[in-house]
Image (tube, rainbow over all chains, first blue to last red; front, side, top):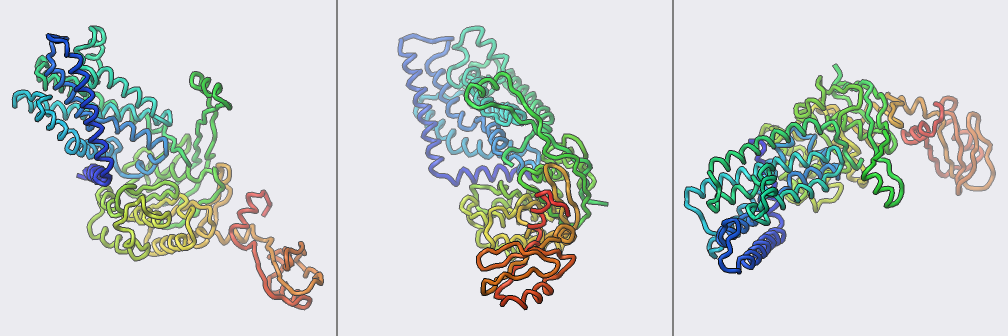
Length: 260
Length: 327
């Protein structure tokens, strides 16, 4: 498989920088700690269970989401806009590869490294410490599949939005906008069920919930049906990958290679 | 059939129009305005397989734009490109398989990893058969001294070492056309020499078509058998370097260092321009008089210590064309 070399190069690059790895691990662990203390404080009033979520469920939801965020990153889109802004996109386009696929595999290399080296150890420590409660083994399989779909949705969304930089020359603002959408509507900071009705309804209509909310619902046993959640994720993944291809075809004539 | 055909190739860029100052920038956030700039204006040429073409012009003349259009990276505003019979922009991937590309100003190497990792990646991306891979890398090790840098991360290489790697990377998959956009920019004489030797060697031994842009006319003189000159987006010259010199290089310049202060008389066919340091400067018409004749006449009056002749080289010719002088 030709494209695996892009994943390999990404893994090697990550292994090159030791200090960067330790920083990333420390950063993720700190954010997990912040979430832990925040939600423990929120629940310190005895008997509180907003939206029917216990402290155990809420911690499992937000801490796992935070641990997973290292590999569910929006870097594909940022990568495109960086390449367009600096003009290095020219070198990429001179290669006989599909940009959507080569970036996908490059991102997959990054994600695999982040999953194995950061997310999985942090998650393991959380389970060991009892902060995250594992569901039944049956549900765990569905959760892992759901994480994989979450990865596809993240990648496809980020790719399609990153391509906008072909028109604008710089996609940084849009990447921030996308990130804001993730913060608000995905469940990465606050479980979606805690939001008032209209916001929840809006979140359900957007693809962001497929990134954290649906996998975490499966993990905490609050998804109505596993099948429904997974189908919703798969639907978004297919739709967004297709959208990425459409935008890609539209975007190409607008490319300007900046910097001479 | 030509390998590369460009027909009335035209490219416009849209440049944001902004005034000076924060206020003006804020206004363009809401009401942007643009102006169209024509980077390339109806340029046509055809290049046969195996030709080595030097593509020259001042900064901003449209050289890099042409390369990106030929490589299928950019879409032309109007006009047509065919490379190997296909439209390089529409069939980008098919085209990319057959071409090599070197940008002097941006790297295609894997920045954080040892050089060999870039070659490992390219080998798979271009599906280079093992025997070709080994034959080519062996050759590059020899010609470009790659063995010295093979295990070093790209980010630690010097510009010259990096450019040798870029060159090898572009030729790894035996492409039928290679575009080199200012491959010798910023390099020292040794690195430039190595790159010219490599290009000469490979263009003589293989059927590769080489399309080279440069500001260093020695690249062209040593490597290319054809030169295309563009100015402000338009093609102004397309011939061999020798013909260019013959046509435009009539007014040559002779400098003679001689002892004493006696002012010499200019020999027939020449004109005394003045003196710089201990050198008398003459200009002469190469069609009317040749250097040995001039020296024979001057030698009777002066005791000549040293002689320099300029104006026969491509550089002074090109300067003359840009200066708007008639041939």
